[in-house]
Amino acid sequence: MTANPWAVFAIASAAVFLVSVDATIAVAAFPALRSSFADTSPATLSWVLNAYTILYAALLVPAGRLVDLHGARRLFLFGVALFTLASAACGMAPGTGSLIAARVVQAVGGAVLTPASLALILGAFPAGQRSAIVGLWSAAGALGAAVGPGAGAVLIELATWRAAFLVNLPFGALILWFAARRLPALNGAAAGEGLDIPGIALIAGGVAALTWGVVHVEEAGLAAATVWGPALAGTGLLISYALWAKGRKAAAIDLSLFTDRTYRLVTVASFVFGIAFSMMFLSSFLFLLQVWDFSQGLTGLAVTPGPLVVIAVAVASGRLVARVGHRAVLVAGGLLYAAAQGCVALLVTQTPAYFTLWFPMQIVGGTAVGLLLVGLSGAAVSGLSPARFGVGGAVNNAVRQLGGVFGTALAVVLVGQAGAGIDAFRLAFICLAAIGLATALLCLPLSHTSGRPAPHPAR
Image (cartoon, rainbow, N blue to C red; front, side, top):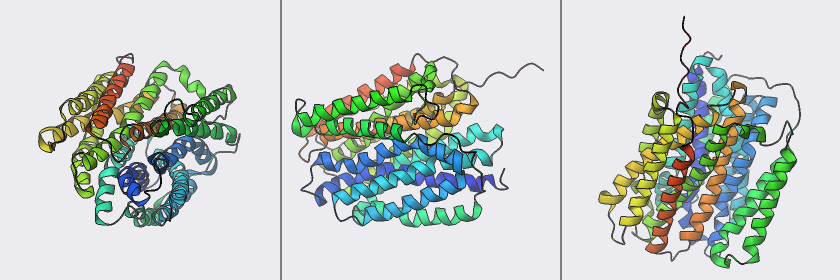
C-alpha cells in the first residue's frame, strides 16, 4: 500500500473525471459544430459523439486485461498522455473527418486510463476501505459526465467549440506531472492469453453498424437500405461475437458473467438507462437553444443544477443502499426519472418556464440520476465473487456506454435537425419517461436484500 493513498485517489479520480467530462462535453458542442460544418449532415456529425463512446465502451474490458498484464501505473501514464494529445488534435481539427479521427484516439486513451485508475486506488487502500473508495471514484466519474455539457456550453459561449477540447490540455498535463511523481509502481501479472482482437473488432463493428442504421432513419426512412442494411450487419456481427466468445477464457467480454441473474438484470437496466442518460443531455440542450432560444452560455448555466444534485445524491447513495438494498434505490430512481421527464413532456410550452418547471424537474431528475448511476454500478457486482469484481464492473460500464451510443442516435433522429419544433421535443421527453419506467421495471425483480451488508457472525 502506498504511503499516501489519498494522493493516489486524487490523481486517479481527476483523470476519470476528465474522461467523463469529455464523454458528454461534445453534446454542448453539437449545435456549434452543426453551424461550423453546415455542409455535414446531423447524422454524420453525431459520430463526433458516437465514435468516442463506441470505442471507449468496446475497449474498456480489453484495456483492463492490458492493465493486469503490464501494470496500472504504466498504462495510466500512457492513457493520460494519449488522451491529452488527442484532445489537442480535436481542438485543432480542420474538418469533420479529422475531428472524428481524433475522437477515436481520445477514446483509446480514455479506455486505457479508466481501468488503470481503478486498479491504482484498489492497490492503494486496504480491503476494508475499498468499497467506499470505489463508490467515491464512481461518483467522480458520474460528476464529470453530468457537468460536461454545462461546462462545455460556457466554454463555447466564451470562445468556440474548439475550447471544449483544448481545455483538457492543461488539466491533462497537470495529472501527468503529479502521476509521474506520486503514483506507486504496480507490477503486472504474468502474461497469459493475449487480447481478444477478433472479439473487440466484432463488438465495435456490430455496435457501429447498428448505430449507423439508427442515425440515418430520419433522412433516409426505415425502408432504406442505408438503414436496414447496417442494422442487419450489426446484428450479425454481435451474434458472431456471442458464438466466438462461447467458452473462450480471454474473450473481450466474458459471457459467463451473465449466468448470474442479478448481473443480467442490472446490465440490461444499465444499457437502458445509458440510452436515457445520453439522450437526455442532447435533447435538453437542443430544446433550450432552439425552442426557448437560450444562448449557449445561458443554456450551460440552466442545466447546472441537475449535475450538482447528481453528485450530492451519488455520494449519499452508498449509505442508502446499505440500509434498504439496491432494489429499492434503483426502482425509486427509475420512477423519479420517469416522473420528471413525464412532467416536462406534459407541461412544457413554447414560453420559457425555467423556475416553475425546468428547475424543479432538474432537481427531481438529478436525484434520480444520482441514485441510478451509483446503484447500478454497485448492484452489478453485488452477486459476483471478489475475483470477478473488476471484470464485472468493466463490462457493466461498457454496456452503459453502449446504451449511450443509442441514446445519442435516438436524440439525433428525433430532435437533431435544426428545424425541430416543440412537438418533436415533447416526443423525446415522452421517450425518456418511458425509458425511466423501463429501468425501474427491470430492477423490480432484484433481490430485496441486494446491496445490504451481510450480518456479522456471532462471536
